[in-house]
Length: 411
Ligand code: AMP
Ligand code: MG
Image (cartoon, rainbow, N blue to C red):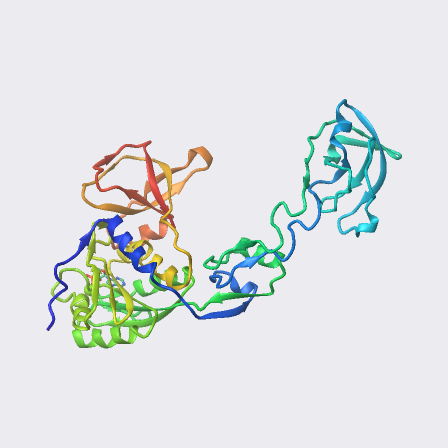
């Protein structure tokens, strides 16, 4: 029987994250496919999107009002001759040739601004009487007109490959006329729970048994990351059974295990992986929850051994598995993004670990505050479900006072 990976490699949070990012940087998905525009939501661009023409394609009015020469409003009120009306969608021949000094053209939002006019004054600041308009507010040159090509030039790349499609990206693709999008194949992620006490959620658990929630939280996180979960069920705490399922998991793009990575006599995950000649990049991180987290590679497949406590599983997925999964999906690397808020009530803790604790961000505008979700440890799924972010406590802090700014990782 192979020994446990030696020596155990326990890294700080930053070091462990760095190791994952280093491995993720070497991953390059190759398989592309074409999908309909709307089906590309959440998928990762395999080819850049370029402007098919200038944006906007013509000088566009941004307001309903009058196109005129800003210099004509030097003294107010100013009265100008209205020489025509330009609707959105007006073809070039319907647009007055030129707006001259002392003239204005009524114009609608989205219509092409006529030559000569260098600004649009909003209709709210005008009154029309016959063919004369009186303007009561001045404008600067350029006000309420977007110049042709000022947003983008024809041929310019607007989104790079590696971008995950969201509704903004869908709008962009639609505006350049793309009906189908080239995206990377979605990675398939094997999810394997372990533990003799774990039962499937359709079963009636005995008093000594626990329902398998981790496979579901992981599957949800995998889906949210744009990948396809493959549920492999529950491995018993028994080497041969575990090995068989791990070998099945190695057929997919990434293997996520949960449970069986602590110091207990029946925590066999690392041992079985070592027998399969796995390479271990780390076997623990100085974090809470999730300290026993394991990251490695076995026969060209990356795997994570996530600690079985439900909160630990969820947190370690977010911190470590997600960047690897995003790389497998073809996404450009991005840094972990923290925001800051004021702490609602004092926290006392111990130094040594970076903590990511389920927390609740609430309030609005300047009143935003964060507080711990009142959890009872790494198994408290209810506290997790009530929370909407993680409060990050650096390893050197023993006490954080109410009112201090603290870092938050959004969910
Ligand atoms: P382990 O990491 O295997 O020592 O498990 C730690 C704790 O997490 C134990 O209390 C387990 O019962 C619990 N646990 C492990 N796997 C799961 C799972 N799939 N779903 C829910 N709880 C789990
Ligand atoms: Mg276990």
